Amino acid sequence: MSALSFAFTHFIRNLLTPPGDICLTCGGKSRLVRNWPGICQRCADGIPWIDKARCLYCGRAFGCPDCLRMEVRDRAFILNRSAVQYSDVMREWLAQYKYRGHERYAQLLIRMMSHTLVQMEREISALHSGAGQPASKMRWKPDMITFVPVSTTRLMERGFNQAQVLAEGLGKIHHIPIVPLLIRSEHTGKQSFKTRQERIQSMQHAFVIDPEGLQFINSIRLDWSTRSKRSLTGTPQSMGALRILLIDDIYTTGSTVNTCSGVMQNAVQHYYGLKTEIFSLTWARS
Ligand SMILES: [Zn+2]
Ligand SMILES: [Zn+2]
Image (cartoon, rainbow, N blue to C red; front, side, top):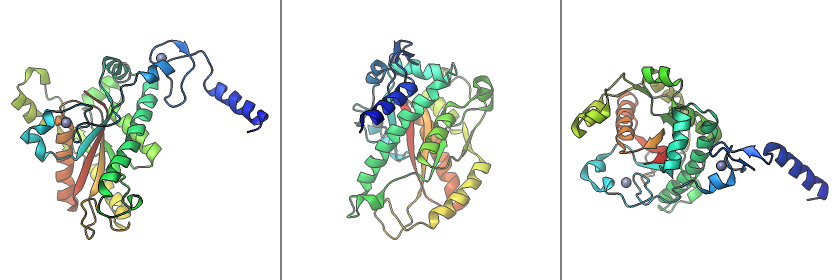
C-alpha cells in the first residue's frame, strides 16, 4: 500500500470512527471498535460470548441439567444457540434496547447475532458433512427466518417487537426471507403467579399460526423444491425438511421457543405436508 493510499484509508477510518466518540454502552469517551457498532474496546472485550456451547441442545455455555430431563427429549426444535451469556451487563444492554427503546442497540445486537449465525452455519454444516459428502455440498442455511411475536397490547406499549427487529436485521445481512409465522394471543396473565403446570398450559395457548405468513411458505417452497436434492438426515432420496430459524432476544427455560416450534411444525405439516427443522437463535442465554 502506498503512503498516500494508507493515509487515505486512515483518513476514512477516522471519519467513520472519530477518536473520542461516546461509547453507546458505557458512555465513556473513547475510540469505537470497528466490528461492533457504537462501542469501545473495553466494552467489546467484556462481551461474554458463548463461543462453544457446552450443551448442544440449548446452547448453554456450561453443563446443563435442564436438557437431561425426559420432557425435553421430545422437543419441537432441534437446537438453540445464543450469542452471549446473560450477565448483569448484558441484562442492562437488553433493557436499554427492549424497555427504553434505545434504537442504536438494535444494530449492535443484530451484528452480534449475525456473528453467532455464521458460527451456527459452520457448526451445523460440520455435523451434517459426516455422511461422506463434502462440507460445501451440505452447507446448512435456513430457508426462512421467523420470530417470537408479542401481543398487540405489548406492541402498542413498546412500539416495536424486539425479536422482529433482530430477525429483520439478520435476514437483510444473510439474504434469508423473513416470514412472520406466529401471532401471540392477548394476555396470558402474570406468569409469576402461576404454578409450573399452569404456566406450561397457558403457554400452549399463547401462540397461534399466522395464516398470512403461512401463505409465504408457498413461494419459498417453490423456490426451495427446485433446488437439488439434499438431506440433513443422511437419506439422500428425501428432500430434507423446511429449515426455519426462530429468533428471540433471550432463551430462559426454552418453553417459548418450544411452544412456537410446535405450533409451526404442526401447521406446516398440516397445510403443506412438509417436515420442518426448527433451529433457534437468541441473543442471550440466561
Ligand atoms: Zn464502552
Ligand atoms: Zn441445555
